[in-house]
Image (tube, rainbow over all chains, first blue to last red; front, side, top):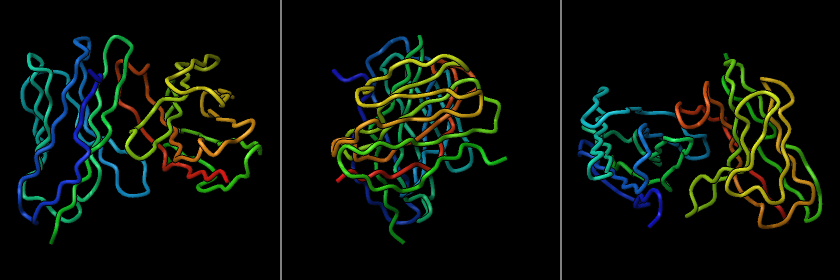
Length: 109
Length: 114
């Protein structure tokens, strides 16, 4: 089993829809969970960061962590064409940092 | 405050040529990293430097060398480029070692090896 699994997509949604992205992981030592957004031909930029189970909200973005199931999610409400990007999950702990492969999202106007 | 900067933005090399990718950060971060990103492979760590004066291998170090010149600068060298090293290279930095803190990425260097 890979350390971090993320479905690469692509995922196409109409403008205004809710985008749901997920990652699963196998390393119980992971304690910190991040989501990065990467626009085409740009470097990844941090979008959300959390270290506990539960939900964390920031504007239209919600990050959800379920440590018991080793499962994290990112929800984007009222999606906009400007949300079209690749979203990478990342997690760290016990001197390990691992990234998912990224999930390409396209929001269609 | 420019964050993480990388030069060059794009480079074409012939097989066997050498080159150095430059990276600098102005956030006073201790740790710096070099990644490569390939389609279907995600980000893979080449080398990292937890602090000035130290460097360690990541997942895919073969064919690369690094130098942590000072706290700000971390360079990646390809001694004899191969087509398999065609990729997008990202430099990143973080305040603390990678187990604890998020990372800040540069804009990337696109390298094509013919």
